Image (cartoon, rainbow, N blue to C red; front, side, top):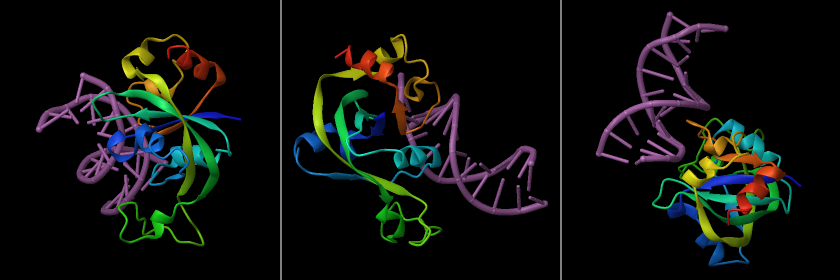
Length: 151
DNA sequence: GCCAACGTTGGC
DNA sequence: GCCAACGTTGGC
């Protein structure tokens, strides 16, 4: 059971989109970075995931979601009308993966990025590393606990 | 809105 | 295989 963190702009899909329909499954598509894709592919059902809000007013970890369905070919890559369309991908040789997530819970408070940066033990987490743009990353059990203790 | 840092592309 | 140019990410 690996734990994870994914970034999202809350305007697109934030924790409230999950919270408002707690029984709904939300496909996580549009990941177009190879390293992030490789992590997506390692996700297993019921893995827990921190949802991080980026590029917004309150930047930080907002809640927990979980994997409902393991990786499958991202349908958006085949759709010419999608902003995530990839003309170099084909159904017999898909390049990009998606997973399905569902709501677990909101954190009792958002844990802001500057606070995460100040914590001991998160130095290896790409999220807090300067210049890192990785949008899907594993979180060790120790890192997970350190973060949750700030709640 | 700015811009530093990054990943990807493509010419050579 | 190198690397300049480009587009994107994401904090500020």
